Length: 575
Image 1 (tube, helix red, strand yellow):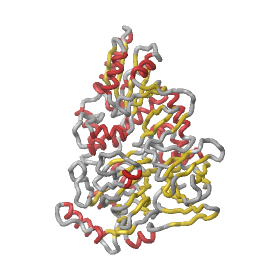
Image 2 (image 1 turned 45 degrees about the vertical axis):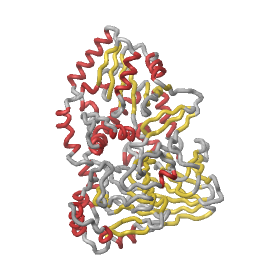
Image 3 (image 1 turned 30 degrees about the vertical axis):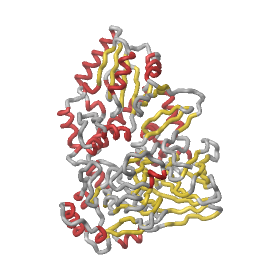
Image 4 (image 1 turned 30 degrees about the horizontal axis):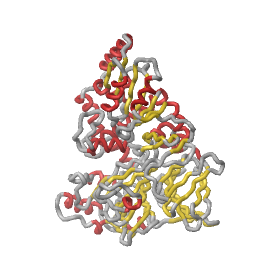
């Protein structure tokens, strides 16, 4: 089986609920109401000009109220937001804002009065933009959504943020404003409106809009969490990136390499709903926000809230270089400095490896952190390059090795491997310490965070500790009837548990109150089935990551070809 770059959740309803193309969409929306007011609420990043043009063209004698014109002045927004943004290029602090706080109350009242007056005279009203729903609750509500990966691509091309006019600003700073402030407020606002939405719009693909009615959308999300599914992966180049994913996954030409492959980061991936061959793309975070308990499990939901706590992604250095030497914050530091409730514990599962592949992990025995940071600071200031191997262990890495990396442990993957990174989800929180003297793809020095690193790096995570705690730790749990189950990978300090199954026969799995995330790390293809027949058989190919909602409870996995060994790695939240 080849790697599916655009997986979807299929619905065989016998109906065609997706409407495609602006003329048909406008006919559907305008025929749905005799009301003269339409509220077109949007997520940040949606192309407002394209949508407004279509609606104004289809609506005669229309008053247009643009939500962007009702916001607080940038100077006031800046006063309110700057302490959450900080002056760092990468890191901010998680902000608690509601969408209404970005708007001028007097402007909202005046806009509402204009809308009511226009309605009274029989004139059409279109209120458009992020925050439009603040103006007139009685209007027909249409919601245009946007996945965060698509937003990032648009930001790179000049898309501004919601709360500032900054088309040419550094993409890292744009992303920071979205991640720490705007997307949080937009998600809270979207969920408060979700049950009232009459029509959802998908404008992810330019010039190919689709719409679906609200009831169908809400029912589709309910159904999605009853079975295994995949989100849509995305891939990005990097200064250290390789070429294995490009060849294996048949990725498009253009970038010089592909460094990252994100195939289970629901905050940023999209989810494609396929209704009898007609696709509708949504942010996969909607599923987490809308169906958290069924998806995550009651125990996991009570601990993390509506956040998906497990991330799977690829790091490709075959034909590339070393990742930056880095460390992740300890939980208390992450909470105090950035306002997040948990940190980025992680592990490296070696999916593919060349003979010279390696992982840098842990300080060498007897090395002092003060000496390391002294030489690191000198190197970063233009002195001699840092002699990494003087301070940090370099371990050989082979296919199917699994390295645990609790927060506070210095580490990076070396060249010559494809890492399946299994980690907690707040993936922005990486403190780069040394980047081997490289510039970023934008020609600028890549951000390093030596002061943060000093505060969290654990000197006692040394050679002796690594050999005892995180190197080559495999516990065989059972081995019979063609199935071998092993506990491998993540350290007891980390909340994620990983199990690897080697099998030629059918394997029984039980979610036991936690969402499962799995990847086929050996073999061509598997079939996931429900013993009770509650979902249709689901297929996954080599290297594909898929999610099994906690509410599924029992499922089985069998190889498509039982004549050769297969293996999956499965992650869940420890009880």
